[in-house]
Image 1 (cartoon, rainbow, N blue to C red):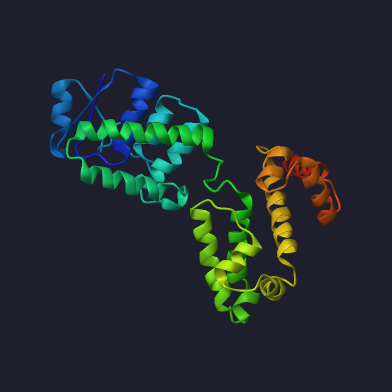
Image 2 (cartoon, rainbow, N blue to C red; image 1 turned 45 degrees about the vertical axis):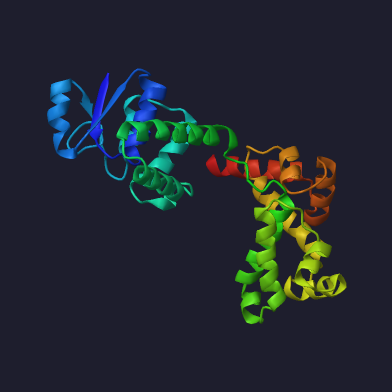
Length: 287
């Protein structure tokens, strides 16, 4: 089957051909022509036009052509639904729909700028969408920073610097510098320790340990990190996709039993009991 659309594709006009070839017709021929020639060439070549006005395969409301293909061919693969939000967000400038949408737009615009041949552009785009599909299906819940303590430290400083308490206090220079050090460490995927942080800040470890509590809810470094780990665990327990073992790992505990012990110490209940109470609450709400 032949499909025809406007030349110089960016998002929808690459995403749709990818969808056609991967899920509808592997032998599909994709034709790109100047915008004013689409309908004339479609009739001459017996091709189906898409992503142009006043045809069946086009935008409807706030949805893009990729959405219509999914609906038309009843492609209910959950991974494709994830991709649909990203494609729609990038193609319609609704970047709030998916955090990956502005990245897809940036890559697509840059690719179109660098590659002048539309069919070469499509082949390179096919690789990008294959990769995006694999990410959505197999790696969507992973983070590039694999050491959870690094991300927790960053969360600590974001919460501190944005908090009302932080706004009332003069933030010391070392706290500002520490925020940058943490980000640098995360970018290079290195481990963090209070001793190493002190060295980078040119501060005595004992001084940093003592002063830390003044700016972090009167808690020590270790206490604050443990609190953040438990708060993160509370969020993850609300997601049925994660097992208790998964949550223990993602929140930096050595094993599930260690996680269970610390969680109960902070909350008064075991994580399994807490998880069941959340599920029961949702069931009661829906009943």
